[in-house]
Length: 335
Image 1 (cartoon, rainbow, N blue to C red):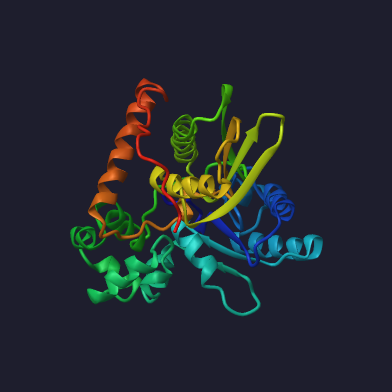
Image 2 (image 1 turned 90 degrees about the horizontal axis):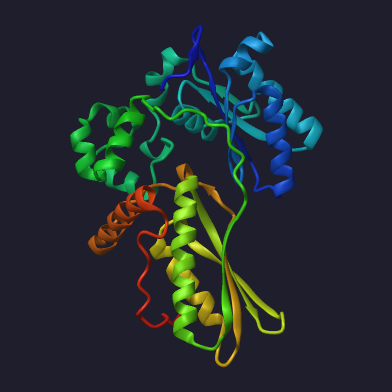
């Protein structure tokens, strides 16, 4: 979807230079809300802004709005930002990473999109991960312009059907995603409370696996991915144990969440503890759009991810409890 008004690019991608505390990030979002009512948070450091109505309201051009935002962020909050503006989310997000010098704002007019994208290295295109870029380079595709010139069918053979289609479209400046007003929560939690104190490891294992599936489904429904997991165990008498570990890569997939959840449970070293409750929390959530779709040579993993998508569709149609996890394997022990 091209967001244009009188030749103006109307999607703004704002990138904070440093990882901000949550409160500071929320202050940046409040500044953006002063510019436009349509702000999509992309924590922990980015956001999208739809400028179509803002251009009419403020009676100025997109670049001036970006410059005005930077001045306000620096003067009021002491926070520097980089502002990319384009006719699509991909163009705006790519622009925000290509800013050099002191200006801090890069606006790409719609009629110049192809010419601006063309010379960029292929890995500069928003959404292209390192492995995807390496595969494209191995094929001789070094720039976004070359990627746009290659047939979509060829790109799909190199990167996979979905990832290849997206890469081919975005290299041509095609991106139908709208800016959706959204302030994403920083975490998501699922809980299980046992009706009685339990010493049974198999019962605890089953409850933990159910929480993994519920958390993964919640994150995928929200369009988010977790960068860390926190496991909290509540014992008889009210005492608790809690530990947090980061995922190797942000994810909302059951397999990745399950592996880390098992390691957290291993770290608890449960023996004869009487457990009465479990809480599994996804931390440092980011938009799933920020997680690059990487190529995987693990066919078994690819099959599991396809099965996960199928189960999500079944649950969406028949309810979240239509399909449940099977917990028969013992806990994986972290090496």
